Length: 148
Image 1: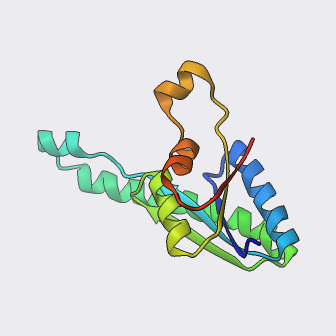
Image 2 (image 1 turned 90 degrees about the vertical axis):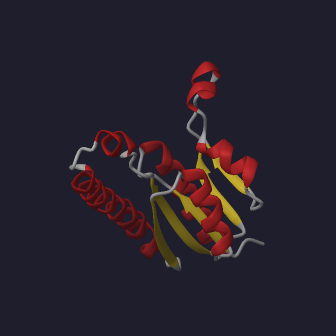
């Protein structure tokens, strides 16, 4: 049925529910997994507009921090996936917004199911803040399993 699952995570406790469910599903199906975490771009336009010289330095520090964080997140998933005997590919997508990066990675890696957690917001908070999960559901042609 499903041969390659994309599991999206930001390393949060809520996202871990999606990871755990995705790993268990992949093990039952004998599916490969692609685990993706995304680092959103830093906005330095304000610094650039004012002519401040620190934007490049700030960007380098931000990038290193994001790379370190992504490595930690992906290694935590790898530590859970390897004992299960799962074929594991890790992907850190830099300088993209999560929903578009998840959808594009799923398509480019040939994934036939995306597994991700829902943020669980309701009402006005959901309207104001939005939902990366909702964006993926709306704009991606790959089926999505949302874990609450």
